Length: 110
Image 1 (cartoon, rainbow, N blue to C red):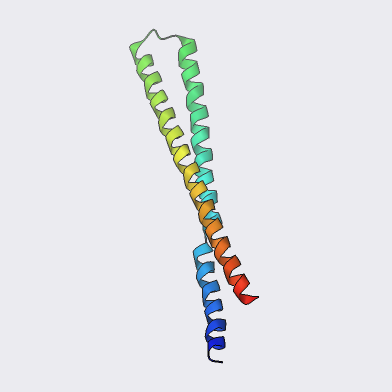
Image 2: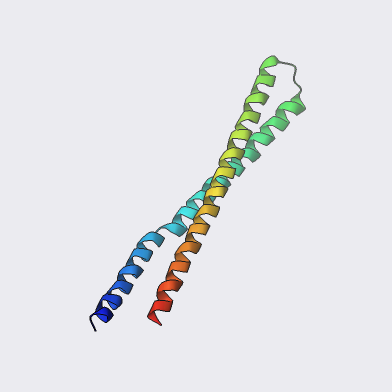
């Protein structure tokens, strides 16, 4: 008989722990997606600037330097976007682990 109260108390504790783990997960995913969107917007802007430099012609050495600098920034923003996409995938995998824990606790309740 004593096992039942411990078991019933353990389940709410487990649920509270899982809820605490879950808290903010969706917000973190959205934050990372926002960073990815910003990175892609920066890449678009920099690519347009590169096109303008190339269309104007590379008559001045400073134009070549400006083009190289913008292309380096494109690489930086592409890397940043990729990193944050991977982070979003990691968070979704974590969410799946939490879902599995909830299923396990739900089965215990049944």
